[in-house]
Amino acid sequence: MDIARRMWTLLEPVHAVTYFTPAARAAFEAAGLRGFWRGYFAGRAAPLGAVGAGPVEATFFGFAPTMVRRALPDVWNRAAPAAALAARLDGARASLSGLAPDTGLTEAAALLRRAAAGLPLAGRPLAAANADLPWPEDPLGAVWHGATLLREHRGDGHVAALLVAGLDGVESLVWRASMDSAREVLQPARGWTDEEWDAAAARLTDRGWLASGTATEIAYAARDTVERQTDVLAAGPWQTLGTDGVSRLEQLLAPLSEAALRLLPHPNPIVLPRPVA
Image (tube, rainbow, N blue to C red; front, side, top):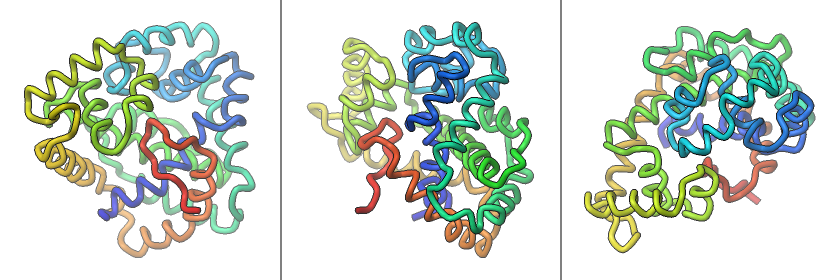
């Protein structure tokens, strides 16, 4: 597996507790963001400031505009961006605390800061917005922030790769559901209607990517191309860290990542793997 992809599988669970754990949801609710999706949209969009629906539709990519507009800009009447940022960090700390030994967190945080130093941010709005935030002073908070910054950097590049492949948001989900996820997982989590989903499936069929709803060889080849391009665009921080640094970071973060993965629902719309029994 490519280093950039391997590091994503390690860091993504650390970031994703922000959305799925009871402690994270409680922190958002305490800030005035009741309901899963208010916390999600406010917490993830807060680094951008009090933006409207448009920038979030563009940067989050896979969500139906109607779903985004139900949350934005209303969430900023319930919690200002600064309050949403504080809530997501508090919830992450509460979720991750005690999952793995604290030994090594300070070193892991320092390695993540090294990886993020000089991060290429051109054309990467979510990564750039998170890079503008101060690093938390505590090691656990810094590890979560580093994981968030680097996953958003990879995500921005992934959106670019999907656009180069000629996919829009709903098409990217229909295509993914035909290979390694399922419609019943992705469609409701991203808010597309049956009519929108079926129309996207028809477009992909016309392109030769689907046949009777099943992914074709063309679709699988496109997935390989998109994933390779995503890995290339995400390689910068790991080249900065170097082979020894990457190896050490993997060693330090593995217990926390594996424990965090067990807190997440499976299956999930992020298409994270199930934890090893």
